[in-house]
Structure formats: C-alpha cells, structure tokens
Length: 125
Image (tube, rainbow, N blue to C red; front, side, top):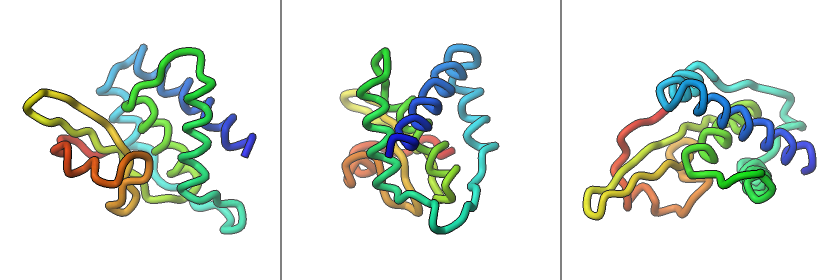
C-alpha cells in the first residue's frame, strides 16, 4: 500500500505541474495520450485499492486537491495498472457547478455512485 500511496503522490505532483504549465487543454491531451498498460495479473491492485491510495495521498498532499486533479491522477494510476478508466467532467446548470470524477467501464469508482445523475457529462478523457 505504501508504494501505491507514493505512486499516487507522484501522479498528483505531475497533474499539478501540468495544470500550472499548460492548463486544462494540455492535461486533457496528456490523458487522451495515456492508454492502459497491462502488467502481470498478480501485481494489479484493485480499483478500490488505487482509489484508497489516491485518497491517502490527497490527505497528505501539501496543498488542497480539487476534484479535477484528484480524478486526473486517479485515471493515470488506474490506466497504469490496466484498468479501463476515464475522467468525466460534468456540470449542472442551476446553481451552476462543475465536477470531475472517474468511471471504469461506465461505473463511477472515485465518487458517489449517483454523481453522474447530478451532473451532465461535458467531456470524457
């Protein structure tokens, strides 16, 4: 688990740097370029283990992590271990709110299971 939390922290730092230097456009491009890796079946952590490691890394990160950064880092780590993950950015009109979450094969993995009913998906990457 320590290794997963460390990898999660590295992903959070990476996403933070990409957002600072290139913004959302570059982050979307990097996520679209990054495809799934398929490692040995015995070494693949579950989706729950990866999401838990990201949550722990967010708790210890040196600044506040927002849903976009958290979701992007989660997608990168899930894809590294062969999971079919995509980040979804959605919005609601009244009151206006936006939110990002992660889905694997159409199932929400890092948020409430009904989040896709509260927000209209605008972008998947």
